Image (cartoon, rainbow, N blue to C red; front, side, top):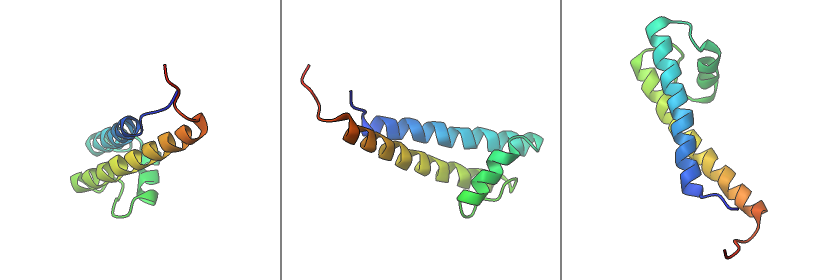
Length: 89
């Protein structure tokens, strides 16, 4: 069985970007929620500052969407290399 590269890229982008969006908004509203995850984002994505306001939430979400799409596509591509050629049903 082979994976659809576009589908896995889109799903990964939505999951990874959505996770950062939700955690960053909840942290912005309440303070302190998901601090370790947001610190991870701050260490990976340039221009993002954990707890930096609504602009930072937008920045980390865009970075995470792009990051999720790239790594989802890369994962599917590598998986398909090891899965072998497509067989007729």
